[in-house]
Image (cartoon, rainbow, N blue to C red; front, side, top):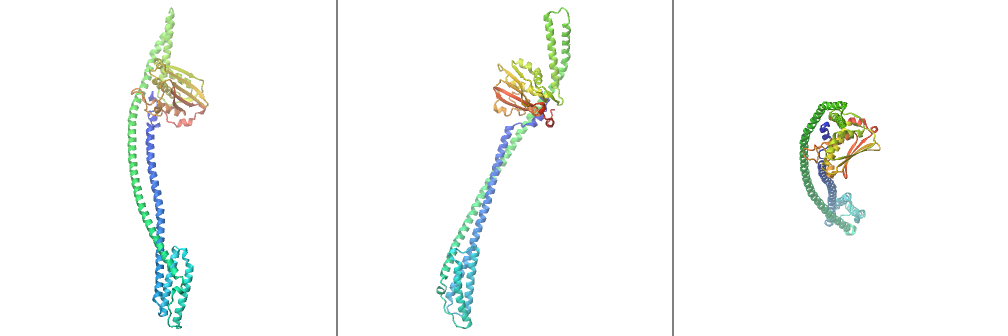
Length: 479
């Protein structure tokens, strides 16, 4: 019977190994996330190292500029001090030019130091420059008098008397120069250490990143190989099952042909029995036997006609269907098997609304569920199958329950996967429940399973008024 529905459609609609695929996807996601996290950390570290290095570079550059400025100031202070010691009684014009040049150099150096980073506040630069300017004014006036011929010589100018702040000024400049020189050395040392540390960390991180990338590539290759092996195995299994399904389809066609051939001899037997019933002088026992023959042949004709209809591979026909009639028609095919195996069947068929369905496909689902329950209880004493129909709001429920061993949790997770079966080789294709699941989904319903003493399969279908014809038209049709 499995040949009635496209096996390829059932396979395409569901994955052969959902748990394996989930594990592979999780491992792949975990590896990708780890690699992305390492790359994110590496990017963040590079950004932080870049900002920190730029800051230290600016500090070192400023310290170097200040160091140069203070060195110029120290040189200017030393030049002016040497000038005062060297020239005691010299021609005024020459001394004036040299002295003014030295003063200008000193002031220029101090202004440069202030512009770059500013002298320390304790130097009080404005006050010192003001007092030093007064000293320079005095010397300039003296040299101007020499130039004007008012006097022939310039007496020695003692800077410690005429410029009392010069010593303090000189000490402050020396101290700031030494301090900033130490700062410059510290900044350069920190920058060098930072650059070395960043280089080492970058090397380590890039090494780790390359190792992780290599591990990710190996993992991806392994996952791909595993997926290919799984796909290849699934395709091989699908090919084998398709061959088996083709045999089943051929068997269905053959059974329809056999049923057609049986109709004629059964009709003859039935007709003869009816004629004999009209013969006079028959005993009551013979009459009863003829009545039994007529009844059983009528039942045989009904079963054969239903078998021919069920085996026919026609197109889908959606119409209003009474689910209770579907259950009763199915029992024409499987009822005798249940009685042969001593399996009791309890029916609780309530008055329920019709559903919009393909009667043959719905009967195929019911047949699959009943035969699965039958196989699960094969040889089990006191075996019983309970079939119940009921209504819940705008849904029609068909419940199939058995008192068998139930379904293990690990099996329940894969029970609707195509080609998954726990039966022995040759006793099951693993397609029945998968195809049934696809049929019920196509009918805008749900097929679920749970354990409650035994296995309980539940079909949930919408009533006719809640069936969406547009959705059904978009679903793949059975072959």
